[in-house]
Length: 78
Image 1 (cartoon, rainbow, N blue to C red):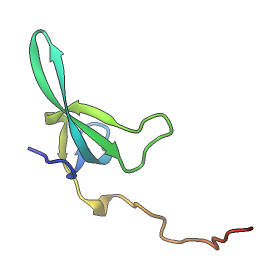
Image 2: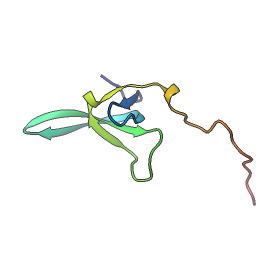
Image 3: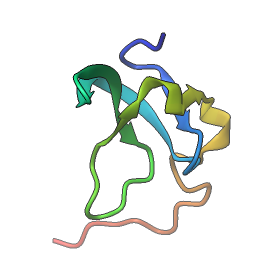
């Protein structure tokens, strides 16, 4: 079972993210627990993913580059 804050990876899409909460999906009067995950590399139209718990596996931060390795000349112009 994953806890809020754990890093997980989706088994099909290979998307890495951090668990932000839980949810529920009902199908044929059966309740399925879901994970709500905020992806590290979010597209402009998706800020949260949700799928059943069995579709997620543990991930590591080594697999994702959170920040660019080179920061080029950042300056503020007044």
